[in-house]
Image (cartoon, rainbow over all chains, first blue to last red; front, top):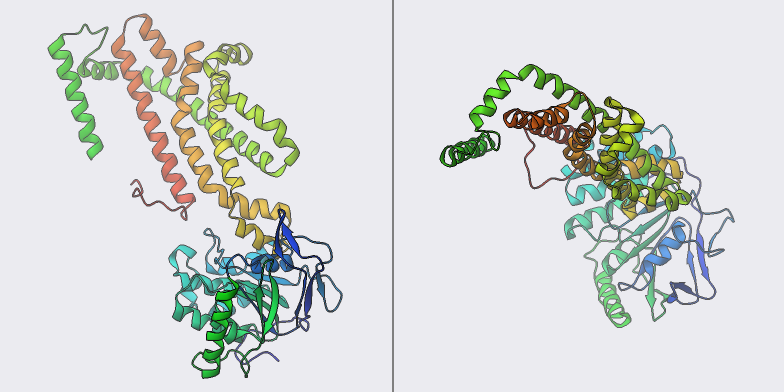
Length: 253
Length: 249
């Protein structure tokens, strides 16, 4: 069931997937990831945490099909993952020649399909952009607003698997807080792989947290606090976990 | 306004120089004499300016079309790059002055050879600037398009081309500035009409004031062309960031 107040979608149940790297991953001869197997359960949010340069973006690009490697990404249902993925990057990647609405419908435009403008407007409304804002160009929007448009564009794709690469790291802390809440609500039910370097973000949003440790890095699972995401940021257990995670990341770096 | 003051100052300096040094008019005519020549010969100046203007505009159109086509081919066709890129460079490395007689021989003394020369001069800045823009699409946009299952054709036309438009605009501004060169050089080599022809003709008869008048008209045409192009491009590409200048009004 879609959560109350969200734009409905016609998608099939979200499949999980796993990334299998029996002999690790090299980029240009440099080992980036060690031999590992990353399970990403269906319909859940999995956070991948690690210091800069630990290979988390590489892993995400591998799943997105932007890096090709035979047999590395296996979906639970056996079908290929290509065509079932939506990708949200650290930069908003809005194109300056289309307005907010045009950016939300960019996928349809690039596939030569007729865009569902009503749905795009509804999604923009949901991420908090008014009707006049929807007609503004990216240059006329603030950084937080642009990231909201990027979130709407990601949701517009209506894919069961959503890959996010530090999606809110370029916005200020209060905006990030609001966007995290929004994303958690709107992405419910999808298989989400969230790459982040922010322990608080991972602890608030994820059902499962993996920390990339060592060199070449391998993912190690860490416990998450009780309760369903989005977890309140003032929760004592969560803040404790954040401190522990920070220390762990500092060691890993 | 400042442009007008600057021009007036220059003309005053020029008039003063001629006045003090008493240079013979066939070496350097006074602005007053140039103005007289401008008035006396305005009908033939206008006629020749129209010819040169048509050559420039046709050259601009053809050069832009060919330049864009070359840039798109280079961007879309990997195998063609090796063949086309040297050709592109050669088109600019050979001086127009050197091949002007050849073009006149091939296309005749009429307008076609001048249009060909203007096209040749305009082609290069347009092609290189546009190709450069097409090559430097924001990698994130390409990644995004890949996850959106866009076809290579859609990525080219709907992402790389619009993203390259500001670069193309730079090329077009350069093209607008150099376009008169091609036409005038062509007219020097062999023509029966045009401002370049008129200048050469006047030079032969030591009518330096007419030469200056023709030069003035050519300069005004070049300025008008550049400002029209600039204005057009600003309108067509409103998202292009421009922190330095206010739009020309």
